[in-house]
Image (cartoon, rainbow over all chains, first blue to last red; front, top):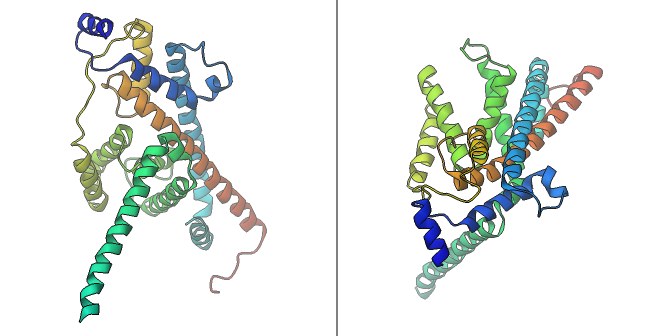
Length: 92
Length: 212
């Protein structure tokens, strides 16, 4: 307790404990497919952050590709409105 | 007479029990399931798929009138998908609120016709703005390293609405955002498969009669 208090006083106003950060980082680590397969003990925080950034960027790219594909499909399907109504009733 | 007096009492009791059961089930779902498991549930994906289809059908209807943003382009589909994702998040996270408010600003400036979604979003954001920011300045041994700081800033820019937030908030938002993005990819790929499959079928066979 005293060590935490001294660390707090030296670092300024910090209301967050290190355990909370470690907990959040471990939760994030569980989601990343890259790090899940390797051994989780030797992964540093910066590696987790880097993998997170890469993963979010790749997900964004995937969503962009899918939305491009969907827009092309919608353009071809809009010509036939009966098909679109059937599709909508199937999905919903 | 006695029966009429008894009936309202039993009705309120059963109502209270039903409400308690609903509240308990809701609280259980929020506490026991972590956020990324909630995003993996089938119901969430179905809700998102239906909202996405509604948004996409609106998009195709709005395309004839000329607007500054490219209608029917991949960009418009991406924005509709992000908006549907933010609505599916029920506005509890910062990134969903940021997506909804940014879309709203564009809508107010360019089109003033639609006021339904604006009222709904205003109600949602007004009820949630009471959440105060709990975290202030923080420091960890590794946190003060410039490389870690840079990566945290990059991550903050990637997740919408988290540019100026401290580290724990960015981490929390990132976990929810990644789970939501994964669900978005699953739902959109399923929808694309469905559309491409039916498109190829319609081109090969004759169209069926509309009345049944």
